[in-house]
Length: 107
Image (cartoon, one colour):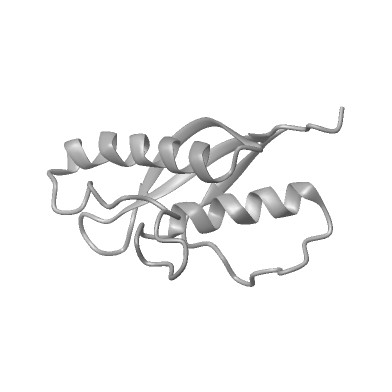
């Protein structure tokens, strides 16, 4: 089953998720909301910010590439089915929206 996750849509972090689905979706949301090098003790977590200050057409393709790389590297239980973006309130702001499928290793 596909799930849609939007960056910066984290209301509460659950440190003890009850299901694998909840854990994976929360992890993906954190990954796509976090700039790389901003997390102490895990500087590789998150997305490189290579799309910043680029023309919007270039930034769109770089953003999609960075989301795919970051999710594949940091959350192997999530399979990215698609990446789109929304325009933020500030002109030129792109907010990634990711469609993922959870890979079930228990079957």
